[in-house]
Length: 423
Ligand code: UDP
Image (cartoon, rainbow, N blue to C red; front, side, top):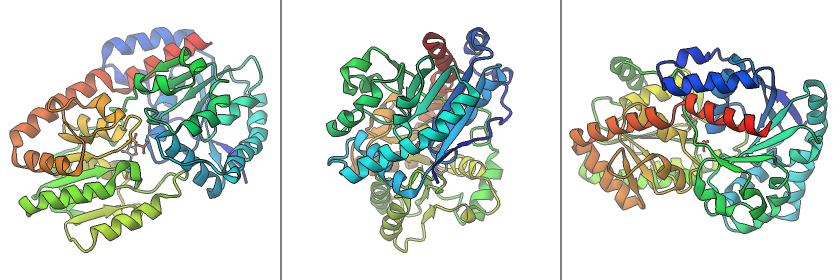
């Protein structure tokens, strides 16, 4: 069954609660929000759990609603065959070589055509002023939006080196949107010429009030990590990420194994709780990761909620982040990478792969470290584990840069400005 399902939007966020984070943006949000009061905005994406998009939308929509904007959130319900194709499209937009087969192209287009029926029904009932479509999965829906309703495409992916075949395939849809929002100006030249002028860059932001991003007492984090079998008294390298080739979990294990030759008591935690339904390939990668991890008792893999006792995923992530010595995000491609922001906000030194989204956040040796290969990653791990002063310095700078640039009130403000312009 192909459906659009309305998600619960009210996670109880109020703009007033963000007063202490970025007071200037807080006031501007109210100014811009007043003009948008009563407007109906419909967000559509592929999943309401798992991954950065769902994470962003939960807070963004709750905040929009708290300002009197009638924002609603709909997610697609479609079979795995569809999500396997959209995963390939996603991978091709991030540069995977190859081409879509005719069958895959038809699965994508036909599913969206089927989806257009519930979509049009919702449009008729809700009568939105603006439809915001997130990422390629529901991108073709733009074709079914009646004239008079404005549309925004929010692309969260790394579009720095897309496979030209996929850009060509998606161009008829991209061209139909009133506005496109991306995370980095580096992606603009890769978009079709006719949409470049209608493109705005907005960098994402994390929610400082969510359970994951609120500070956790070290002692509580120690207890939780201990219960998970990890020794909080020994160094911990952590990557929090979906099991996905672009996040390079195999490269992380390799870097850890090299570093372990020097630091024998090193532990590695890979946390990728599988929640997103638009990521059917995750289990396949997980099997490869398990194989590579072998029987090393110091490698801890988390992929299922049943492994984290009764903790919520957010509480689990917060605990292992707090307890970790060094965080790594060895991405090969990264649209932005909220996991990096979350770790930096916890004041952790982050080692990031040399990908677009990582470079938006980390300045090498100033607020983290950027590495281009496994050997560099291993050396960075060794350097940081051995040097608490450096960890402290980078971690402090990291937290400050998130405070200045990557918190939700700022993200919300930038979006409100675009809504105003488009409407
Ligand atoms: N997350 C995760 N793995 C987990 C639990 C949570 O990746 O085991 C969260 C993570 O904390 C972050 C989001 O999922 O908020 C991932 O967002 P990001 O932008 O880093 O990557 P994406 O998955 O969207 O490519």
